[in-house]
Length: 131
Image (cartoon, rainbow, N blue to C red; front, side):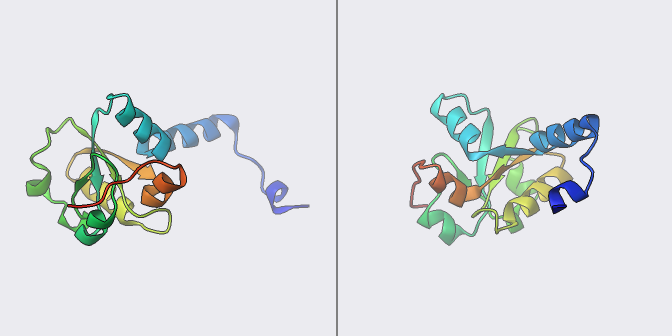
């Protein structure tokens, strides 16, 4: 018996709740790119890495705000109802999770873009350099 079949699968209702829950907290590179390309980006895109990483390569239209600098004062420029999408380097980095947690503690609407810069590049999407 393989590990896949050793553990009973979740009840379909529980599985639906779980996966729909993930979609409430996360988005992906493709969906962010598509929204930007269509001019339908109804969110602020925050690169939460260090400023030097942002200067080296970032997503088009992204703003730099390192996760450690996310406080009420630094996000006050965004209307409270604004959805904020955060990203970092990629799956090996938890900066986006830290940023999302900080934003949620501040009462902000937030989603994490899974994949980060690494995922964006893997999809073949263009990046920008410079501050």
